Image (cartoon, rainbow, N blue to C red; front, side):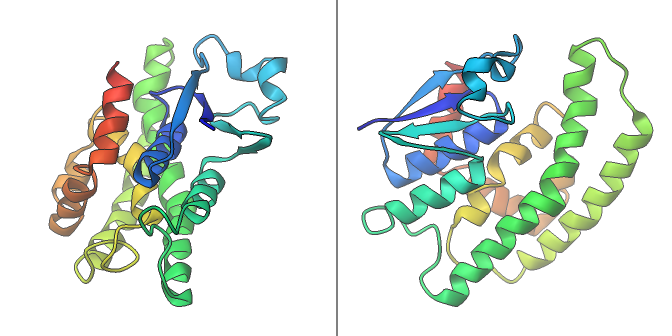
Length: 214
């Protein structure tokens, strides 16, 4: 049965889920949700995701929302038939979870606010809060220094294997590199840039990017 992913191909969180599904070899159908018209806030969609956010998935009778929960679910469900994105030992799995938490709580919010201020609000005709941009850039600089140090010792965040911890960063870094115009924050850090070039070259991510452009 084909998994239905409700969201937009251009939105970061659905991209996270799509990248995981492609990596795991899971067939899916993207059911477009028009974010600009506020479709995700309408009653029909709120039945799928009561907080009015994308994505949500439907897999037969099973429904789930929150992108990181979804990617954990599919990486676990298809661990025997697909690539190992979770780690093999208990310790490896714990480190994957650790960096997923870092991405969610130390990295993602800063990038979200930068994209909101530099990209989304100007498109809506609203002013950018330059003080907030400066604060977020300063904080993100410190976070990325930690990433660069970590990646000086390992090829990937959780060790020497590509995992959900790496995959989960793909959408936000793409926004940072492109629409937000802050690619220097990645390129100026040798280890971080090498890691980005590696993970963004994966066939699964290229497939997601092609779908975004279609």
